[in-house]
Image 1 (tube, rainbow, N blue to C red):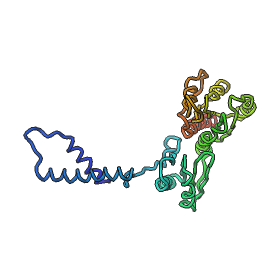
Image 2: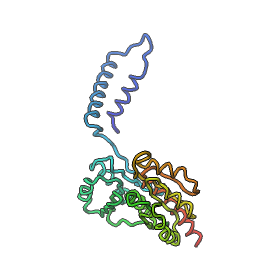
Image 3: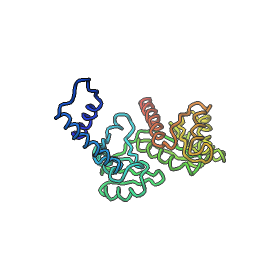
Image 4: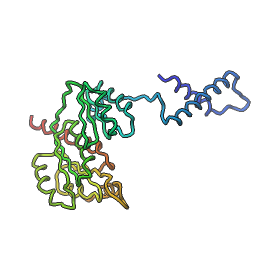
Length: 284
C-alpha cells in the first residue's frame, strides 16, 4: 500500500471540504494540512521535473488469455526499456510468454540481454518481440486466418495482426501487395485462401482504403478492415482509408482503428477460434 498517496488523498479531501461558518481548524489540524500541502507541492514539482512518478506500479495480466481468449500485449512505443522489461517479467512469470508490440529499436538488444535464458523472437516486419519461457508450449486452436495487404507499405501493420493471430493459436496465411491498382493480382491468391477453408480475413490498406470493401463483396467469411496510416494530403495518415471502410456498402466488413494491428489480429482470431471449436464439435 502507498501510504504517501493515501495522505495526499486525505489532504485533497480536507482541502475540498468547506468549513462551516463559525468553525475553524484546530492548530494541530492546520499544521498537519500545511505539512501535507508542502509535501504535495514538492511531489508535483518532482512530477513536472521528471515527467513521471518513480513509484509507478504495473499490474501484468497473465490470465487474460485464459479469461477472455486474447493475451495481454505490452505496447512498447511509449515505454522505456526498464518498464518494458519489468512488465515482460511479470507476464513470463504468470503465463510463460510476453508479447511486446511497437518495440523501439534501441530496446531489442536490451531485451535479448535481459532474457538470455529465454527464447526471444524478434519480428522485425511487425516491429514486435515475443519472449518464451523455456518449455513454453504453443496452443494450436485449428482456427484459420488470412491476412491481406493492399501494398507493401501496409505490411508492418498487417504483420502485427498476423503475429497476434498466430499467438492466439491460429494458422495464418499472408497475401501481400494485391491492392486495387492492380486488382488482377488478387484473384488467384484469394481463391487459394478460400479453398484452404479460412475462417476470417484481415485486410490492411491505406490511401483510399478500397481493398477491404472489394474483398468483403466477394468472400463468404467475416472481413476485418485494417486502415493504415499510409497516404498524403487531404485525408492522409489513414483518415481517408478509415472513412472509406466505415462507409462500405459491402456486408460483412467490420473495421478497427487506424494501424490497430493488435485489434484486427485478436478480433479475427476470436472469430476463427470459435468457428474451429464449432467445427471440432460437429465432427465428434
